[in-house]
Length: 298
Image (cartoon, rainbow, N blue to C red):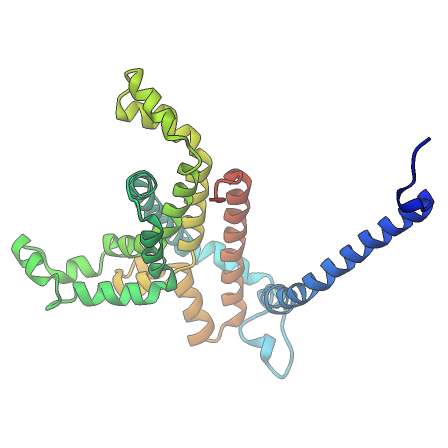
C-alpha cells in the first residue's frame, strides 16, 4: 500500500501541487507583463502605425482633412524605386562577402590562437556603437590632405577617386558589421573539438582539406547565421553610402526613404519604403534563426 507524504491524503497533496504550479505561472506572467507592454507600445504599435501610413498619399495622414488611402505607394516602389532596392541589396551582399572572407580566418585565430580572447572581443564591440562615426572617420582619412593622401600620391591615385567609390562604401559597411560575423562564426568554432583537426592532420589531410571537410561542415550553421545577420544589418545602413559613395551608392533605399519622408514630407511613400525594408529584415531574421540551430550560443 502506497504511503502518503506527511500523512496527508493524496488529493490534498495534488491540490497543493497544482496551487504551487499556478502561483509560479502567475508570477512568471507578472514578471513578463511589463516587458510585453513596453514591446507592444514602442515596437509593434509604431510598426502598425507605419504600415497604415504606407497606404496613404503624401502627407495626408497628418493633414487636418484626414488621410487619403491609396495603394499606389507600393506600385511606385516596385516601378520607380526598384533600382534603389537593388542597389541596397547589392551593397549589403558585397559587404557580407567581404565579412565572410576575412571573418572566418579572424574567428579561427581568435578562438584557437589568442589566449586573451575576451579582451579582443571587448575591443571588437566598438564598431557596433554606430555606422555614422565609422563613415565620418573613413571620410576624414580619405579626404584630400588626409592621413591617406601620401599613400595615394605614391600610388598615383586621386583621393576623390577612392573616397566616392563603391569599394570605400563596402569597406566601411564591412567594418561596422565585422564583429557580428566574427562572433557568430567564433561561437560555432568554439563548439568544435580541436582534436578533430589534429586527427585530420594525422591522417594526412592538408589545411585546406581540413577546412573544407571538417571545419566548414561543423560550423555551417554559424556561418549561415553570420551571413544572414550581417546582411540584415547592412540593408538598413545609409551613412556609408551618403558620406563615402558616388551617386549610384547614394541611391540606397534607407537614404532615399529619409529624403522622401523628412525632406519632402511624403510620409506615405517613405512608410512604404520602410515596410519593404522591414519585410526584408524579417525574412532575413527568420532564416537566420531557422538555420543557425543554436550556433550563436557560446
